[in-house]
View 1: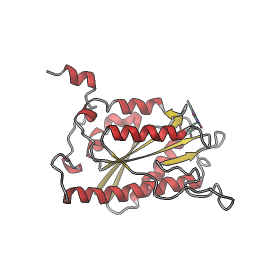
View 2: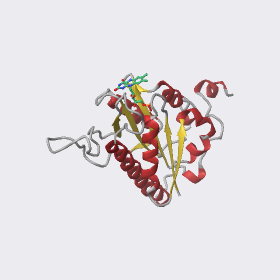
View 3: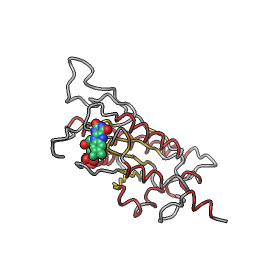
View 4: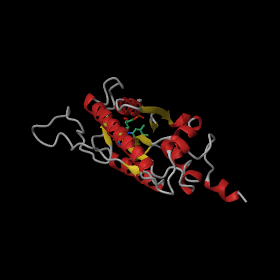
Length: 223
Ligand SMILES: Cc1cc2nc3c(=O)[nH]c(=O)nc-3n(C[C@H](O)[C@H](O)[C@H](O)COP(=O)(O)O)c2cc1C
């Protein structure tokens, strides 16, 4: 099985959760893929799943042109043991965000997710299709209507319920991206085994414990 975890935060309208489920559907359509959906509030119950994953997909709403504070809190839990011991090196990574504005400064959010993955030594997967809605022939119904390449850029009108926003085009874009990441993760997981590097660890030999990773201060206190 290719193991994929989706870690997301969603609070205001549930829009990021809608996207997370779409990413999950897309990933699960790839044969042999097992997906675990993890809200950041529940992350402490899932450390072994994360350590064992072939791919981790990150989702945060754009709050004040940034990842949400609660998502950053999750990121900073990785700034000790996971970062220093390189526990997540060579895991596949990708991301998605949603904002109310069509721009909304959401590129900054995706950039933060990609930099975060890079700090952990992960391999970031971009969008596989070109941007939509580029011309008079385009429309809001186009896939990737925000024309983002780093990951899924969705948009949800602030006065609509989660059943209506984000619109179907964004949900389908999230499904497509989850599907693409699952394909890349499957190809890479098989390739890693066939062409092993001596520094590499694999999903079925995951290091790390079930409890929250040691923080940097905790690591520095150790003899
Ligand atoms: C604290 C806060 C800050 C926000 N900042 C932005 C922003 O910078 N740009 C934007 O376009 N929308 C912003 N929004 C709107 C959210 O990005 C949007 O409603 C999103 O779909 C919420 O996702 P969620 O329902 O998963 O929390 C903000 C919303 C909140 C609650």
